[in-house]
Length: 77
Image 1 (cartoon, rainbow, N blue to C red):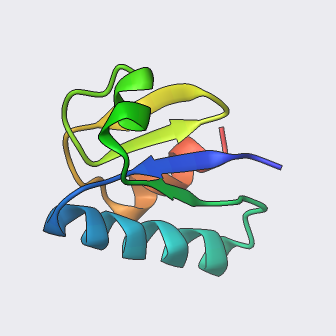
Image 2 (image 1 turned 180 degrees about the vertical axis):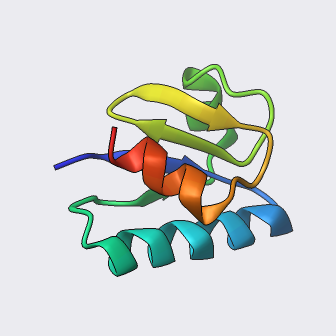
């Protein structure tokens, strides 16, 4: 199972969260989505702009809200 971590703070992050959940549900992707709000935990990933997406410990996207298609592509690589 993929273990994407969605790192967030602020309103655009809610949009990102909703899109991510929709993509996972619509495409039957086996993933556990976890949100991280603690700034110290976020900094451990070296993320300096949010929202961000971490998959299996690797930051694959940060600083913008991607399209549904892009999230699907990242989660199904």
